[in-house]
Amino acid sequence: MTETTDAPKDILANIAQCVQTGKADANMNIPMGSKGQPGVAEWVDQAIAKDVPPQTILAEGLMAGLQVIGKKFAANEVFIPEVLIAARAMHAGMNKLKPLFAEQDMPSRGTFVMGTVQGDLHDIGKNLVCMLLEGAGWRIIDVGVDCAPEKLVAAIKEHPDCAVGLSALLTTTMVAMGKAVSAIRESFPDKTVIVGGAPVTEEFAKEIGASGYAPDPSAAIDLLDRLQPAA
Ligand code: B12
Image (cartoon, rainbow, N blue to C red; front, side, top):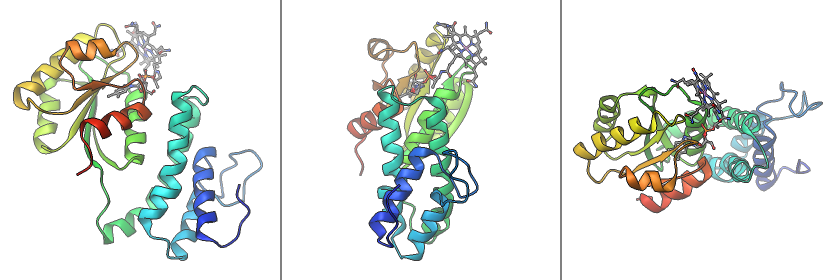
C-alpha cells in the first residue's frame, strides 16, 4: 500500500490498491492480517472529506483498480475468486459515491442489457462481465438466465439506446443464442449485440449475425468502445 500522506493522489492509489486486493473495508481480514486497517470504504470516505470529485474517485481509484484486475484476469494471472472479491470491494466504494452522484448526474457510458440465453442457467461469466462493465461506467440491466428471445426484445424496447450482451455456456444453447440474435435483429436491425461464453467463437458470432465476440470482460469493454463509442 502507498505510504499515507494526506495527498489525494496517494488516497486514490490506496483505493485502487485495496480494490485489487479485495479489501472492501477495515473489518475485512483480506489480505490476512489487515483487519483494522482502512479498506476501500474508509479511503473513499477520506477522499470525499478531501473534496476529491466523485468522478475522480471513481475513475482514478475504483475503476483504475478494477481495470488492473480485469487485465490480469484476461492474462490468467488472477482467477474468478479474486475478480469476485475485487468487484465486491469496488461495490463498497460505489455505495459511498452513489449518494454524491445522485446529487449530480451519474456519469454513464451507456446502458448494457445482458442475459444468458434460453435453456442455459450458467451465470458466473455473465455476472463477471456485468460487474466489470459496470466498473467501466456502463449501467447494467441484467435480465438473468434462461432468457427467451421475447424477454430480451422487451428489455431492449425499454432501453432503446442500449448495447446488448448474450452469454451461452453449453454447445446445445448456442442454437438459442442464434435465435436470440435473429429475434433482436428483426426489431432492431442495427443494435450492437455482443456475444460470449466458453463455447462461443468469433466465427460463430459472425455466423449468427452478432456485432462482435469477446472472450472476457476486459475485451468486452474494448469491443464496446469500438462498436458503440461514447457519445
Ligand atoms: C459452474 C458450472 C455449472 C453450474 C452453473 C452455476 C452458475 N450459477 O453458473 C451448474 C452446476 C448449475 C451447471 C449445470 C450444468 N452444466 Co455446467 N458447468 C459449470 C462449469 C464448471 C463452470 C462454468 C463457469 O462458470 N465458468 C467460469 C466463468 C467465469 O467462465 P465463462 O462462463 O466462460 O465466462 C467467461 C467468458 O466466457 C466470458 N463470457 C461469458 N459470457 C459472456 C458474454 C459476453 C457478452 C461476453 C462479451 C463475454 C462472456 O467472460 C467470462 C469471464 O471471462 C463448466 C466447466 C468449465 N470449467 O467451464 C461446466 C459446463 C459449462 N457445464 C456443462 C454441462 C454439460 C452442464 C449441465 C448440462 C450438466 C447436467 N448434465 O445437468 C448443466 C446445464 C444446466 C443448464 N441448463 O444450464 C458442460 C458444457 C458442455 C458443453 N460443451 O456443452 C461444461 C463445459 C462442463 C463439462 N466439461 O462438461 N454447470
